[in-house]
Amino acid sequence: MHIPTLIARKRDGEALTPGEIRSVIKQFTSGEMPDYQMSALAMAIFFRGMTDEELAALVDAMLHSGSTLSWANDDPMRVDKHSTGGIGDKTSLIIAPLLACDGLWVPMISGRGLGITGGTLDKLESIPGFNTQLDEQRIREILAEFGCVMIGQTADICPADKKLYALRDVTGTVPSIPLITASIMSKKLAEGLNRLVLDVKFGSGAFMQNRADAETLAAAMVRAGEALGVATTALLNPMNEPTGHSAGNALEVAEAVACLQGRGPSDLEKICLELAAAVSNSPRDVLAKRLRDGTAWERFQRMVEAQGGDLASLERITAVHAAPVILDVRAKESGQIIRMDSRQMGLAVLNLGAGRATAGGAIDFAVGCDQIAKTGTQVRSGDVIARIHARSTEAAAAAAETILSGVEIR
Ligand code: URA
Picture 1 (tube, rainbow, N blue to C red):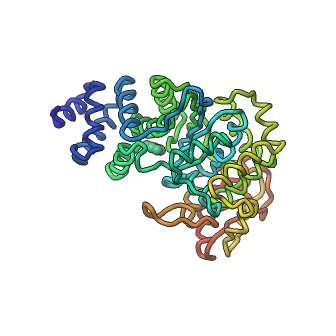
Picture 2: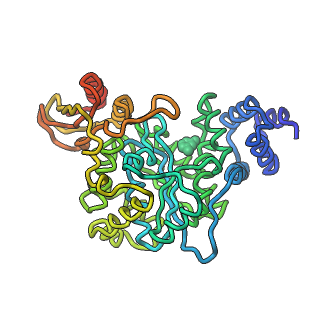
Picture 3: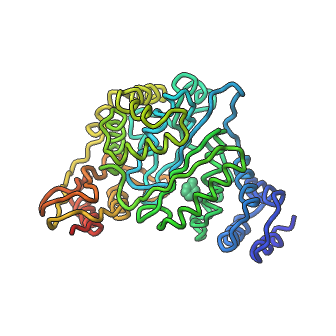
């Protein structure tokens, strides 16, 4: 296979064969194909797109570039949900134990924060002792006992995606629907799932800024999942305002705990129930009951304990991670909140230190924002519309300015 010819064919709009795609991913993963050729091919894919057949082959090749979780025929059904990322999105923490109460297995592999969007792994690691790097034997043991396990991508799961994502990040090829689809679906399908629900966000705080692009991405991911034998559903959800009332690692864990204890904000509970119902054996009212009667909370605690997390700290997570400066953000006028922009909130929380400034950098679990008011709320001038948790008064003031620039009251 002559790689320059293959790149040129893709550049000119020709489809590659599944065999060619498999070979490219194999050579790229092993290092035989240099990064500059892969970058050129990624750019050709960015402009030319991929056919369904090409995309299914790419997902399959990437998912088989490393190890996958494997299951026995008599193991329970494996299900999962994946969100394309948002602000204040702590749904994974609630959905994994909720689905496990159904007798399903949820081997959830999650990621870290990306840009302004938060990551499930970072949130979980705010629980002292919680270990997200488990070997396959331990993953199986925890699933057999509790039905859910929440872990990070290991070095041997989808190494092709790790390499390709790093290249895309620096070559302007991240926002390509086939490349996003292959990246997300290869990692999710490496879990050996039977059913998958995708939470595809659109809006100011999402990867996809408008609904039409989110629909295209959702349809591509569903087709790729189905082509590889996984019953895949996608729900489109707006991300113009943060989910729930909090954004920031420990603050979000506290809100997820409240939701698991049946005291969650209504928008958070609603989206969790909708997503869970899409892959569950139980109807929504049964799932709602499990959130409200403590069944899902009990399951979450057992999983946290099994993964080394300290339960006493979990119950007082915002005291364990307490930021020294608390600043109220107040409404500048009276009226109805018509915008509480999630992008501005995401930027503010990232700059407070809840996300990373450099790859592999440290994050601050304590900082963020809570008491975030929802759009539609009537407020009077001076009412608290958010509360900032910061390391310094300067950082808090900068965050307040960023947040207020995304607030509109009329
Ligand atoms: N998340 C991923 O894992 N990959 C992408 O390409 C985009 C979001």
